[in-house]
Length: 504
Image 1 (tube, rainbow, N blue to C red):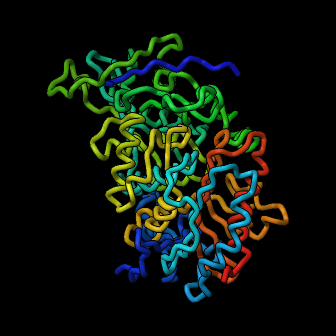
Image 2 (image 1 turned 90 degrees about the vertical axis):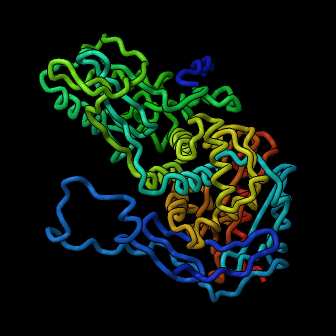
């Protein structure tokens, strides 16, 4: 497809005991069987809804009370928990299993690997493990941990409508919810909806008829496309112009995108100016004619008085809120949703008082990870999705990040595991781990993948044949051309070798 020119920038520019730690930094990890089932490694503690996750997800307005319905049953675990008493692999055993595989030609000349035992924290294997490497979509693990730490799992992103300067004017103020839907037919199930917001506005206006819609998308600043993105990202269906106001992740046709999501790996045509598109959709919901002009502007400061009983300029006419961050992160990881990832990075920036831009989101993510005790010198980001080739993350930082999310010291971070694809079963690993040399990893590898031309990565968790839980990360950023299937199988053979052996 021809590459469209980028849209010009706009907007104002009691906890479990601590295990032994290795010299560089300690490790302990947990496995989240689903977003509602947390299995903490070495402790055997399962946290299920009702519990913290129930609080993060909240309840629907007007839902029956607990007295009016039977208690919700505990969900069954879908994956076995790790066995803390299982024999621990040795560094020599892991090296013997992996060394021949790491040198596979399909992985290219730069292969960086980190493997650790998640109960003892012992590093079991490393090859360039501290070397910053292009991570591709594995970046989303860092973005997810950062937004869960900065915003919290229960945070919901608001989309507001306020009264404009003149009677009948409505200003639609974007808060950065990428999943906002027009109506019940939106792309993301359970998303906030513009038709609900329009109903609130009509009620708040009373006898005043809507006359005009202005969109305020100034909450995000800077360019709408990251300069390090490949030239085909704007038109390739996996990226979009990142604005503070959009519907359905900027997809042009949400219904068609839903129907074709599996066939296209979630690629879809995106609109070039998502905020104006959302404004026009909102105008139609308010009953304005289809040819009404929608422009960008700013919400007026709230006034203390209004004329003829009309809402005062700047007064709130309605508000809808996104799914909680715990669910947004789950979708981001499971579907490798780049637009949600960029929106999450900007939420980190807003939480840290930085500009909600690519640069601000990257800087804020680096800051949060540093505050969590992760080595800031091993991560350099330009975006939150991993589409940028200028991102760098070390494999050992990824395994440390997974460790931190599961060690019980930050329970809010455990939600990062809910969306991890399962080998041979779900998400980006659905069609993998099918060959005889990789099938040992099917059902026991849970990992995030990353792919750009010449870049392939995978990071996550694997249970050995003896029931020992390990964390691993493999990053390659100089793979040979035309070898995607071979490269993926070579990556899968590494984690499958860990699943197949006791490595002692």
